Amino acid sequence: MKKAKILVYITGIIMAVVTMFFSAGCRKSTEHKTKVGIILPMTGILAEMGQYEKQAMMLGAEHLNKSGPSDIELIFEDGKGDNKAVAAAAAKLLDVDKVQMLITSTTGASLTARPLAERRNVPLIAFCMGSDLAPGSKSTIRYYIGIEEESGAIMRRLGAYPRDTKIGVLFASAPVWKTAITDLYQPFLTSHFITPPTIEEYAVNDTDFRPQISRLKNAGVRVLVLLGYGFEYTPIFNQMEELRLRDNLEILGGWGFLYTPVPPRMLEGIEVAGPTYVIDRGAGRDSFESDFTKKYGRTPNFDAAFAYEVAIRLPDLLNLLHTAPPSGMKAALFNEGVINGVVGQYHFTPDGNMIVGTGMGIFRDGHIKEH
Image (tube, rainbow, N blue to C red; front, side, top):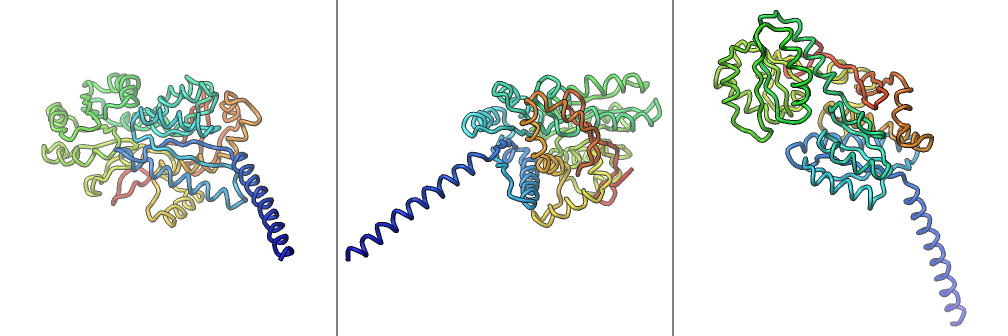
């Protein structure tokens, strides 16, 4: 009886010791994970964008793990398309989770999170088009197509029209487009065309665009530049048809057309500026698209491609933190020169802006094809 009790006692001690070492090992493993905080608009009006980005980053992490267990932990927070929610999420990731890198989506979210990340000396990777976000910071990198690249492609196309063409612009009231209109489009359109452009603005949550459409029609606009998020394009196109502005109207636009649920018949012939990924798939891009579609049951958009590109490059980006302070990341990325990625060829400027190959495509049979 005593032997049995002694055996049970010894067994208990052994189990306790094993549990202690196992728990210590788990804690050590968790503590040595490099945490990356990611704030995406997973609910709200930009939820589709955030969901694509999250799925692509999870796929990228999965691909990294295939070459061996990754020591990177991704922690996702919902920015909800609201700056207050973004600020709360950033504070939680930085102060509670102690992330070593922060990733944000959209210009508004990136601008909100940037000062919080800077005060804690944590680098910020931004999926946004804003051109002044990275230059204004020592450790913020814009890892996304810039508004200058998209605008440049559209303006080059506009430059091929006769000087007497009547041009209109309809854009969503967001800082990135307001700046683009003031700094890029207006100077170009005013100097290149005889008749001043008719420029109309709308609020993101608008549903009635008839006043703006009527003014564009009355001005005799024949070429329209449409700049928005895409989800609002369906009522815009329906109301353009209702007011007969769509007849013989040529339309050019940017990344909003890569999200829009507008029926294919309405999109036929519309010209769209976008990164190489959108217009010309290569072998690496086809592989990503195939893997994404197989896993999630839908075709990835270009936002997913940028998010995936960052995810698979996280080991390299985080390694820079061990070889240089956060402020040294810009110089290191600039010195890398041209990179061949899923989104096409790209490089970084000394101030931290990504420059990606951009061109014009055209909608044919519901798909964007090379112009």
